[in-house]
Image (cartoon, rainbow, N blue to C red; front, top):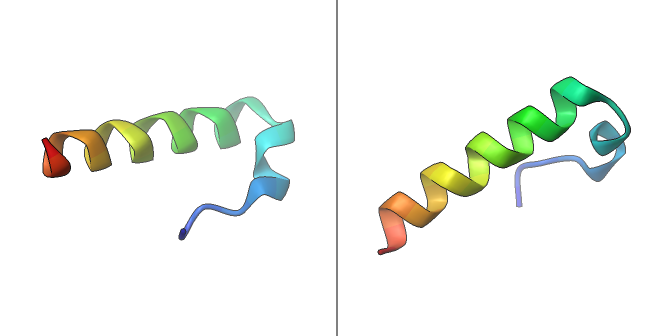
Length: 29
């Protein structure tokens, strides 16, 4: 996974993770 979990402590990190997961879900199904 390309997302660093250390970034989850910040709002921007959560937004990046959320958008990453959304893009992954669109690709996979």
